[in-house]
Length: 296
Image (cartoon, rainbow, N blue to C red; front, side):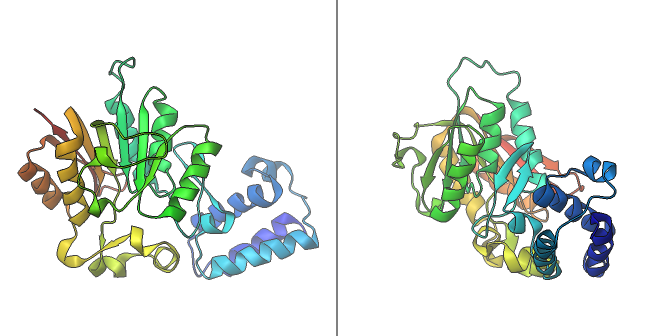
């Protein structure tokens, strides 16, 4: 069978589940994954033939897509900030909005003196996409990252190796931490203070589950997604309180946030004494990121 013939079949079986643009994206992700053919290669080889064995692989993947399994979990990989990351059922899939958070942090450091020792901590790291991307683009900084899940950290460690960066990973439950500098690590004790603390913690309230797409709700880890309606800012409060102890003078705290809780998150940081608080929208026009400074 020709690849272009299978493409018609592929579109027909998914058209009632996904929009055409999404299906096309899936198709070309898979041509590269299964045949090492980029979009331009497919265009230049209109008579490319796929074997019976390859058709079996396509059919198996198509069946999973019909169940709305995220394609990143099918291929086991996702791209984030120009880097490739392993993903599996123990990690959230990195998202474009989080790339904007990383970009904001990198931009905040462009004018800084690079000879100075500089410490960054990511809390709730998952795949490690935030700290790895920061280290790859700010090679002079020291980066540490925390997650409660050892299985997620196994993925994050492999991602650090594959992207050729060194990250200090620590397994702990951030809600039980009293001082970030006291966490034991495999390599050494953490620094007593950090210049930047960043987190993309769980922030989707249970009441918002009806807004979540089936592919996210059925497949991505709920521990990393959801918080109780009664205390939706639980992680933000805890991390901000730790930042009061462990941010350096004029240190920065960055959060990805629930789009509906921008005002409440600003008030939380203001009440704790953070200054120069800035709320930023994502590419979709939603309140998504916040930055605060610990001025002494």
